[in-house]
Amino acid sequence: MDAIEFRGKNIDPDDFGYIELNVFIDDFTNLQSVIDYFKDKNYLVISTGEILANSIKTSFTVISIVLGIFAAIALFASVFGIVNVMIISVLERQKEIGILKALGARSNDIFNIFLFESIFLGVLGWLFGWLLTLIVTKILSTAFDRLLLTNNSIQANLESFNITSFDLPIPLFILIITFFLAIIFTLLSGLYPAIQAARQNPVDTLRSE
Image: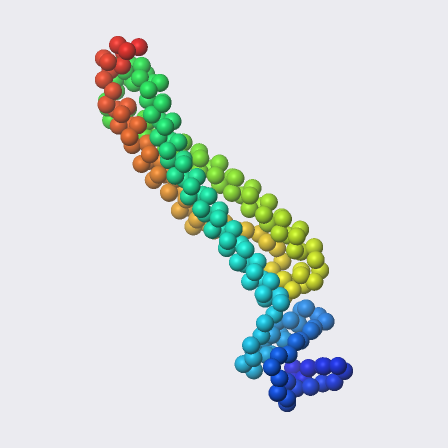
């Protein structure tokens, strides 16, 4: 591109002095080539499409941070929830614990039973959490698609930056990390109730029943 058509005339931006030059193109498929042309000449190029794309990326970043905060809050809340559930379970199943010990179950066996139950609750919560995450991200992606991609001008600008949809992909490493975090946190939250269950005296528990 050696010249630019301006008011019916071909001009070269290097032939005159200027502070700002507004360039309008008829075909958005040529947008990137126009941007590259000016950047190669060391000009500062500001594209409305690029600004829009960056704004959208920023919005997605903010959404991700907000969702991450809610996820952290939910994680800590689930820890306390599992502790409460398992403590209540120990209190309600004292007779069962006493019978198991009377039949020869060791304290270590009782400990493992309650610890694995807490881990099971954590994995179950992790599965439901990911299901909810997939539903929310799908709703957000659909909302952005309908809001922005229905406008032909905006859609053409976005397509010039290879943005054809607003899918929110969930990286595999996040899936793996959250799974192990769920295991670790539920393991820690189940330790105290499991220890309490293992310390139950079979004579006292059966007598109390």
